[in-house]
Length: 71
Image (cartoon, rainbow, N blue to C red; front, side, top):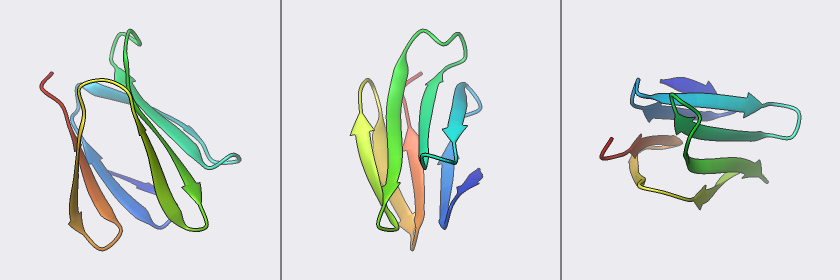
């Protein structure tokens, strides 16, 4: 689990996270950096999702999400 601004984000250890706090964006990739599963950005304190491949977004609480893959 990581904290991304006011949000708690859960994801598998099989994924690698890249964050750019200055532009308020993050991406989840496979460990080998082969596939982008999702990119996320914060706009007006809301998460904007850009799913790309094999991702399920589950809201598990107020400002808390879990990204799940079949990987």
